[in-house]
Amino acid sequence: MSIKTEIIEINIDDNQIFEKLKDYYKKGKLVAIPTETVYGLSADATNDKGTKNIYKAKGRPSDNPLIVHFAKLEQLDNIVSLDNENVKKLISAFWPGPMTVILPIINKGIISKNVTAGLDTLAVRMPKNKVARLILEKTNVLLAAPSANTSGKPSPTKFEHVYNDLNGKIDVIIKSEISELGLESTVIDCTKYPFAIVRPGSITKDDIEKVLGEGSIYYNNQEDVTKIISPGMKYRHYSPDADLIIYTGSEDSLLDILKNKGSEIGFITYENMKNKLENFSVNIKYLADSEENIEECNKNLYNILREYDNENVEKIYILDILETDKSKALVNRLRKASSKK
Image 1 (cartoon, rainbow, N blue to C red):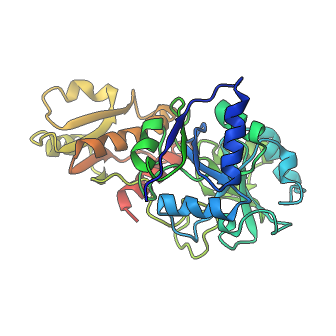
Image 2: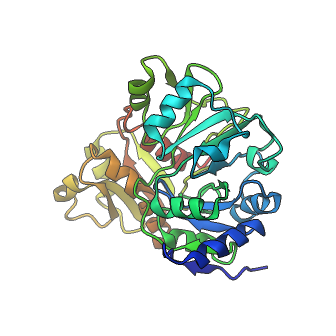
């Protein structure tokens, strides 16, 4: 059964909008909201009906936990433990912003079990995006909000992406600007020390060590995942319809492969390569001016993958990207998108 999806633009002075959204959350309805990372599909994190509807609308596996978004630290009182001094340092340095922390739950009776997927931990984040903060502050609701897309597809960074995936499946889409960062938040497991980055994002290991000290955190490479404590750890993610091929050979050898191909083949590259591609017929899209501009690459990746979905390409090639602390999140998303697992 199809739902009539409302499109709403937030007006800071229109309190009726926020009262409406608060009522919708109370009734278990779903609202797609912008954040600085990607668009999120939000429901009241204390509402069993709403949180169950998130999984249903996305087609998301029920053992994949959700991140709870909030506006003020006091909202987490009596829900999770915030006593750890290193956690307090992270909060001071990176919130509001694209950092999610996994903390021990101290009261299981508040957050829906659908959110935690039966775990004794909870992932929480204080977003920076102005519209997201307005909604959180004005409704005073704790929001469970995974990415607002069909599970497995590239995450949505634009209103149009959400509309294409979820129109007729959710109650409201908040129409707003493109996501500033374009990749999901860094997720840090703070339940044991040293802390572990279980999903890389724009806040890097180096950024965190500048706050907590060297050796305070490591990347969990997630090679053998039996217990999913964070989104992005196990299931197929970020994948376009076409096969995404990360080419590990030389630039010249890839150009040799592509030079006689047509528009059914996609090529993701950089603007500093334009002069080498003048006579190519492949469908070329530029991730950034150069590979060094990681922020621009992050911002553009999902949008490019979704553009290719609309253009029915068969294969997409991209040269392998050197993995550094700064590029780790980008490389992580590309590898998951190419594996289709």
